[in-house]
Length: 290
Ligand code: SF4
Ligand code: SF4
Ligand code: SF4
Image 1 (tube, protein in one colour):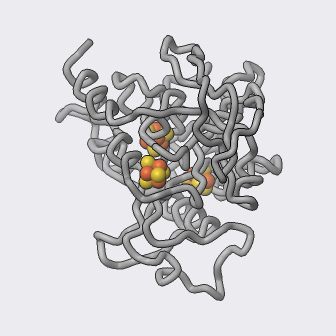
Image 2 (tube, protein in one colour):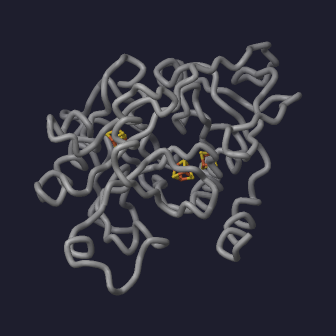
């Protein structure tokens, strides 16, 4: 095991609890419930040689035990981001960020320390620390990379969360139940990609409340948030808002990684792709064509 991975596992060692989701994110957004800690958890093979805990029984939000089998759909949703298409259309990155943030009522605060981000553009060197060297070609170095939560198949943030406000849902999406978040920020320390934001301020102060998306909840001060792979849309059979914003360009392709006939699997088969920090063993579900 290399040093980088050992160091990471030490950080991820703050984690003590784990679990996979049961009800849909849409349900949870409406009801404020999510899978919660349980007794009798068992180890489940993720298919990558890494094991996660799966609850044998759930407790409800009041702490009462409810017998509920974890329903898995067999899906594992993922995303391919084709950076060549973003280079061809330099305005596309900003458009995607804007659409995502408008769809999810992500507040805008000018002060850097208050900033909340679900997706953003960053330098190649920041995005791909393991694929970086000083002799990289200029098209790569001169263009920014769209980053978002990787919806890791082996997510350290889920293991770190003591309340299961962060959980992996039945479709493999790493989702959040804002009502359960106690703001401890263990998940932020555990995420090796820095993909989570903390609401130091009331996020509603950074929104024009006349223009918010009323189909998606606003959050509150003291809560963590991040990209949710548009679980609320995917649950309704729609594509993520960012994918839709790319139109027919195919700059972003979303789909079921477990379906060999899906478009995303065909794209992955036909193109060389890379993931962010693959050596950490988190198994990101976001892939990049560079
Ligand atoms: S990218 Fe970070 S926040 Fe997203 S699932 Fe992976 S560890 Fe969790
Ligand atoms: S900040 Fe919220 S989501 Fe993150 S670990 Fe704490 S309770 Fe879980
Ligand atoms: S998948 Fe949805 S939440 Fe994630 S970056 Fe795209 S639009 Fe935002």
